[in-house]
Length: 482
Image 1 (cartoon, rainbow, N blue to C red):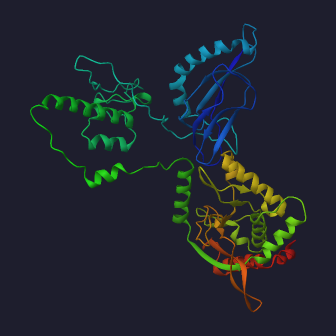
Image 2 (cartoon, rainbow, N blue to C red):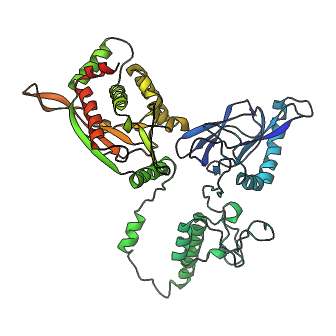
């Protein structure tokens, strides 16, 4: 007899408590195998394909595309094992589809309530969570369907919001009475207030009667249409005065608002936290990179995989961190301790269509230039494709930021919290330079180091940066550490 198992949204990495369903990869009635990806979700860090730990027939899915679910919420159910009638799983796919449709409707409320109290139970990366935070499921707003024409001329009649069933004898939404109006967004409340609209007269199209912005906008359009109809009857008697929109209203109409969510929101939060918590300082120096570029050209001329400039800079960074381990650290503010790391997990800034991400090269100190080149290329490609895992985006101890690819010379990098330092590298360009007592054209680069002043003083930071510059100007200096 088949057993129906429930697969919940697993823990997707440290600090992630929710994910948005981007695309379902299976339908109700499909046969899935163990570890087959069943849904693509977007977290605050990356796009992730979630594999199902069960093999069988999908009987129900929970959440439409665009729905945001907390960790631990049910994703789907799978019928595992031989069905009672002895038919193979494929023969029962049609029955599973119809049964799954009924199961999704009957269990939707139970799944929302259960997700508030149970842990994830399934682990994709890192560790599980003991309890998911209480969150309301959000669905992308869909404009409500227009009501059927009524006897009052076809205008939409506002109806009181009918809330969900009472819990423990108390109504969960009491818009029709004296309870709270079922509205979450303060923007929706403000829009209604500015236009003199009573939210208690609207019917919400969201989950559990939730009033969405689309509901308010629909009501305003309906009211405007009714006003135009009323004015039409008065046209022969009077003409309305022509008014020009105010400059402020015209400016608002040209304004675009972009939500700070997903990767953009995470970057904003992290940078704000870095500026708030870390007392940072920056020092910089110009270096003659001519010999470094000659060394790279000689390495690539000898055959084998090509070595990137970023890989050589990373190799220099790991050598410098071995001499100045204070910068490969973090601060435990609660314990008032500096935590120095034995291994170097090197993050590097990568610009993608979805925003700035910082993939992490694990154990960069143990890699040679060829291995670093290959790993940089792999992670960069995954970043552009949006397939980086949360594990590949966390755990860095030091960051290398090559903003020279954007054609700029210098910058004051913001530390990638909770790390203690970041090395910025500008473009390498020909410039006049005094070389061996004579003016010459050399390949010059500006290096800048932003560091947490709690972990070290300027002497340590200056020593680190000077060592990096020496290695850039004379790559043979690295031979002392090999």
